[in-house]
Length: 72
Ligand code: SF4
Ligand code: SF4
Image (tube, rainbow, N blue to C red; front, side, top):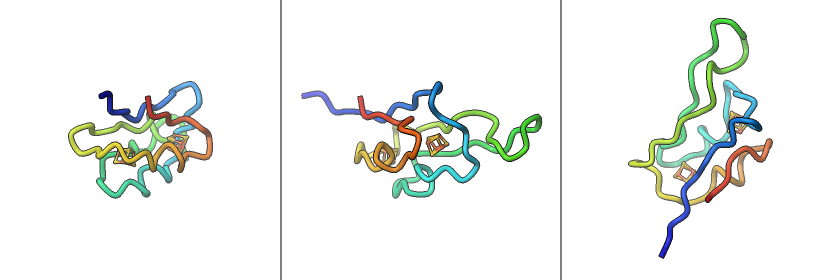
């Protein structure tokens, strides 16, 4: 049986500093990046997902308003 993992589509992620996927992840696995030095108000890169901590719950897929997170 395959277990789906969260994946971030970098072409859709708009690098919110207050990423709701990160704030909503109960495991602390979905981690927003720090602010960009060249683009104030944006994170320097898309969030990262710690797959050691991730419980594959799928909450982040539902939370992202941009549809940038998919369980694949
Ligand atoms: S994953 Fe979604 S909510 Fe999080 S920074 Fe990217 S677009 Fe924003
Ligand atoms: S699938 Fe669940 S545990 Fe894993 S990063 Fe998304 S919200 Fe966090």
